[in-house]
Image 1: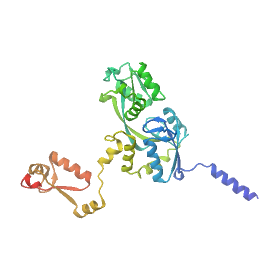
Image 2: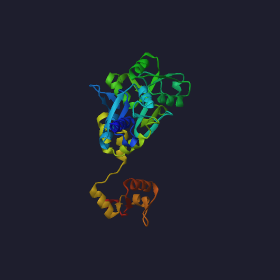
Image 3: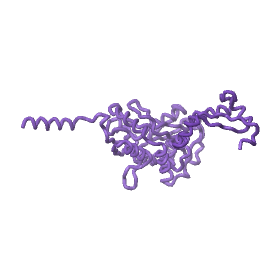
Amino acid sequence: MLRIHIIILYLLMMLLVPLHAEDKTHFTVAIDPDYIPFTQKDIDNNPSGLLIDFWDLWAKKNGYSISYRFYPWEETLLATERGEVDFHSGTTNDRDWMYASNPIYELRTALFTTYNSSIATVLDLSKKCIGTIDKYYGSLVKRVVGDTVKIVTYDEYAPMIEALKSGDIDAFIDDLEAMRYFFIKTGQMNLFKVIQNKQLQFTNKVYAITNKTNAPLLKKINEGIKKLDLVDLVKLEEIWLPRIDDAFYNKKLLQKVEYTPKEKEWIIEEGSLTVTGDPIWVENAALQDSFRYRGVAGDYMKSMSKKMKIELKPFPIGSVNLTV
């Protein structure tokens, strides 16, 4: 009987021991319900958005399960820091307690003001009041404008927008895609504009974030991210973004050269690809005896050769008419 009690006690103790990172298969993630189109509540109060689909795909590809917990933006960070969740769905790596995954996305961030505002330059923001949801974005403004600008932090978009309309703040800073969606959703697209000054537009990398205790999970997170196919990720952008010309994954896909199995066989067999064109262009592109690239055209071919992972050999001809 004593032996049975000891076995039961041992099993209970095993249940209380936390899983090691390598054994973990279920993950909890902090998200903001109003960060459209990246994280949000749908009409049935379920999580949805580009980052939700990203992490659902990540879980599916790796045999994991995942659940989401809603918080206002600043609380998503505090909940992650306190360990209430395993990791944050995606934000900048800008606080001392944060441990970051490999980058999962990239966002364009800018300042917005009312349509009739005269604010156009950095100097115009001196002694002005700027709203923000994320404190880090406020620090970006101060870095450019200086300490003369006042930063006011809000928990949600609606009160920040109302503050701009009432004149309590002069502008606000946030992500371009998120604000476009908010303006369309609330029918206010014609009331606001982006301040077009390049100094006031930023690009921010986005990471999954853990606290120190959960940092060992990052290895598993990163390994899982590597299994995601770019084509699938571009499909997520096609679903959630009105246009994807400058979207993060679409740009990465356009920069990547993929060959079909038959093309790979041909490359292995041939070893190189010959390129011809205007005789003057070919002459200026390479030294014919060694095929070493030179000049502007040569630099372009060198770059193409590296990207395509195949040698491009200029093929000299006597006349441009012979190119076809």
